[in-house]
Image (cartoon, rainbow, N blue to C red):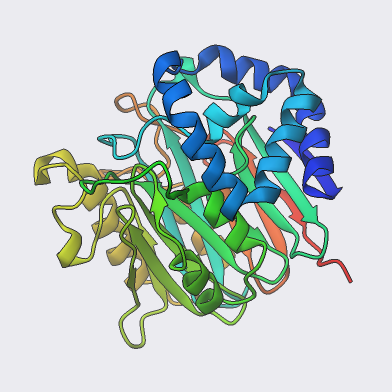
Length: 342
């Protein structure tokens, strides 16, 4: 996994990123499912108007990325403004947050894929855009964000793909791009939630967990363009999200019947049971959960097609982000120390 550090204007950040990830971006473009060109020409004006109105700096970052990587701007746009709106989702990812413990609040995630032979090139981006909060973002080469990471103010966010039944518009903001912008502008969980709810979004539908340096945590369940907040029960020091909506009101919002999300529910129940029995809620506890094998695997390899691509842990109190490429049960985490610019 390449770690790319960039700062300055959005265009400068994009150019540095594109140049550093040139080979990986070309690899990603070769692997992606191509757009229908007629559909792209028809929908592109609405996408561009939306980005120019709501996310002009991200559009500049994409233009810089295309220039740095030596590819067309449309190629980068198509990675970041995907054709899907509410696809049926089958892949798995597991997120856990602790509100407190000897290592402070924690966020942990295993990012899972469905086909190891077609694994996309992943990267870690350390981004300090002018006058905004620096962030560490884990994503795929050429994509600005997949909504996994932490900022220098101590707001950590992770996502799991779910699905969505609701109609969407190409004039809605892509939810992953909006989350990236919100992370660079939020110093608390409450601020992140408020910003996320400020615009209608489009995307395949996600469940998120959020925790900040004070230990304030929640889950944002977003069958786009709807967004609902799930909060922890009184006195509970942990939350999780897997690949389904846990709010009863959203139980049928993901286009899957109950038997299509059995594994997501099993992982959620395992996490609830395991976390409720913890005493310390420590970094070691988080690592143990992410490395778990058993009847319900959290570190996923060796059974079926789903596999863990990479793993992340954020420590909001200290600004540390731990990561590893591959299975967390087989490797030790590497460390990034994130500092906020003066």
